[in-house]
Image (cartoon, rainbow, N blue to C red; front, top):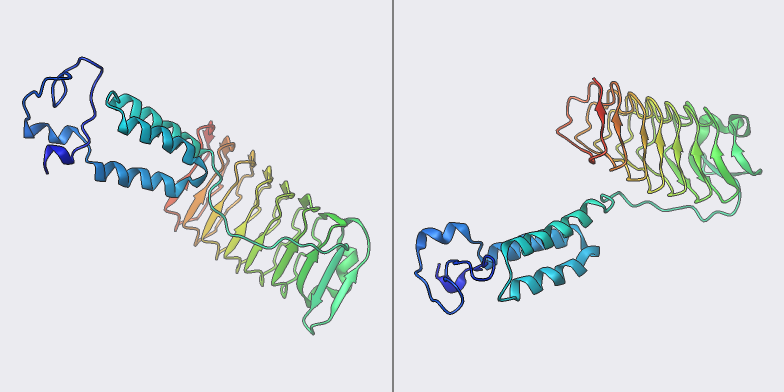
Length: 289
């Protein structure tokens, strides 16, 4: 590699670098090559950051300006890259993408004989409202008139395969979808702020869940024994992560906890023996065993 192929980053003006002070050609020493990054290396690293943070491209203009400047220093370039990395850390991790219901009613049920039942009402959906159809429900669509799912509403609905939420739903009660062994994927709307205790416990075939962007609290044992769940992304909006939240999620491989989670409580990842990566923000103050 020739000196012309190098990105020679100078020190403060007047300090002798690989080419000496301005106007002084200096003496080129090949042993100094290890102290400088090639243009190809810098381009590669910038591209990595671009891929991770397309919304932070404005900072890249600053980096480009520093690279082109005759007076740019290592510190200035590193500072620009550090700023970009900070912006990347504040972005939401990538999620699965799910449809949000635009149904204007209260609750729509599809049964295993392909019939469709419209449940009338408004506000909170309760177990009594769907009890007649409970063992035959295949699909659920919660519309604009539904604001919450009460405790145990869909508990033991083993035939339930899909749930579609509107942006009016705010909370899912305790054990609301417990033992729904037919569920394979779930996408929460951004309006849902609370998942109750044991909400998805024993949903043993649940392989993917999108927690949305507005979730603030995940209850105790919320995903206990979701044995097929492979990854979880807790959004930055989440403050409370309940104890035993992912208890015995045996096939969970990766977990990303939002930057506002401050505690990893007792047995959060108990018996998650496939877990290889857990990432979290700098607000973590305690990790319980």
